[in-house]
Length: 81
Image (cartoon, rainbow, N blue to C red; front, top):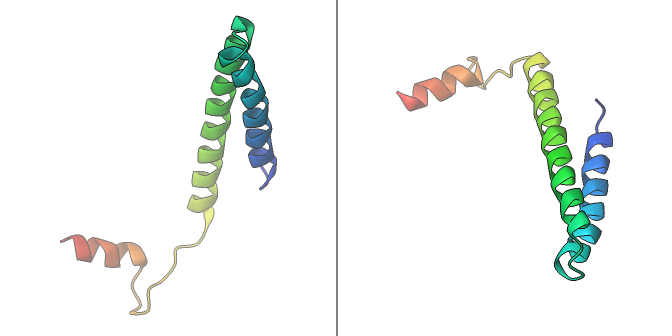
């Protein structure tokens, strides 16, 4: 995945859902409600894919070292004790 592609797809889905929401709520077209539900499901899957990609990218990055020489994870763990 590349940055921007997924977010553009999310924006595109939301914009199309906005039009369908008007048709469903104002013009009372039930078919638009089905399109809204499908679009929301597509958003859910896309959001999950973005979350997985973010986590994978984050896991591949080298661990940052704090100023005192220890890892940030160790510093956080020490604060929690």
